[in-house]
Image 1 (cartoon, rainbow, N blue to C red):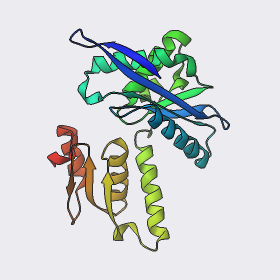
Image 2: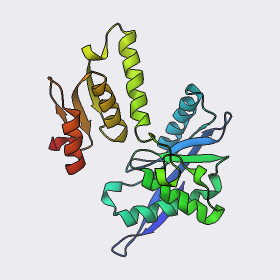
Image 3: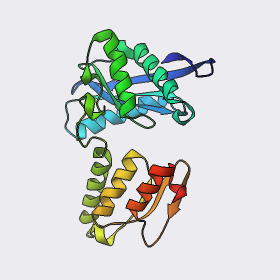
Image 4: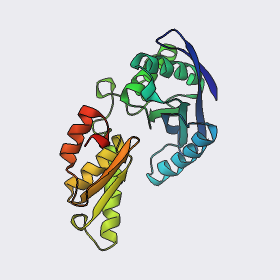
Length: 231
């Protein structure tokens, strides 16, 4: 747990709390996202770090489990304030991170841009180290399809559960709680697979249509206005 003093755009100095929890590295380096959320705290990231241990083990990838976070609402900060906050967090945590020790990734409230800032700040001390983060921009060595992968994976598992229950995606309805990067990708994959998406929600509201939502139209409106309640 660290304090993160940040100069805001108006000249005020605010101190945020940052966290990193390392749960288990018996299968490989610690691996887990960094989330920006007002409710982030030490007990929260500890629990999420433990879940990452189980996730990496179930996926049979050679990593352990970790999680990080900052108690902040990223929607209330400017791009430059988020840049400064991310760099301060990285410089405060650089001694516990590393390609063979602990690798960060995007999570709730963070993005590929956040990973680019982490990579750059870490590199200012340790030299160019693209492997310190996953989920970074393609032009910095990121993986094609990474942005859609978590939601697509959730949809694949959901479709398998539907089939195992004796039904088909075309006979099924879907509701998505949390229409962000993961939820929107999952909804689109299910929609393209023939399922009827009847409800979605995000932090600002929810919409429902028993006859099915047009995901193409929904995504276009969200790209313009930013929330599902504008649909």
